[in-house]
Image: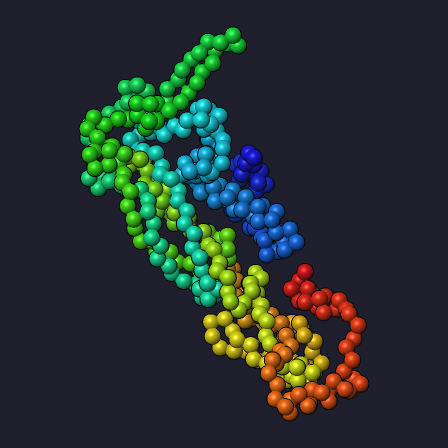
Length: 363
């Protein structure tokens, strides 16, 4: 499916200012954030990602200029992803022409996945990532060799034109120059270390700072840490995609956390207090009113996760009746007496419990 125009996605004019683009994106990000659309999460995630992609391109002057000129660039080209103008204009062959400027083509963007625990998300963390990418060749300093000159076949344009005469008229096909591979320049003596490409594969350790409150699907762009450009071209970006590890105890709902807390029947029936563990250590006391049903959700304000834009979520504690599997003789006698009591007959089935749980989580 063809991608929508980025200006159309954000609902702004092609001459919109950076501030207008930011304002439009903030509005859409709030409207389509998956946490705000639990009943339509699939569509929300798609629209949220579409708006984010459009913003990433249009708020950056360099990427916006390329987009205004060429539209959507094919995926893996170091551009915006998707199919578009290069295929339409050049018959599927991507031109990397330097146009006589002496600057090579931009390197590809790379993506790495970074799984994080809830504890790391709660505090923020700095991670070391091992990345294999194309780096500038040190032997030729990224130039690809010696004796650089304008390609004689394409005259530095990086493209060749072939004209065919058909019954429908003249047909012009434009494709990347086979002699210079779209670079517009050639080197008389290619570098033996890199084969004339101006770059070599290498592995590096990259440090990335992750702010507190990120969520799965968020990403952090590291400018210039992708693949180096061919023959001195600008390096692409390294995009760090956030993933979230499943926690043994807590569920995440936006900035809120939830957990099940086993509580004895006597405390649920007579009332009392229960202690719930907090993420990262420590405990909090939860009041249990007399006659609390199993499944009741108690909210502890401010004990959830920090938000990316400030504030903090809550901790939702679901109280579950704990049933002992081993009973002493005295315990059995007490429970037998309780079972014989007239006030211990169970009520008929009801949906009220599920309604309370649903209302507690807003949906």
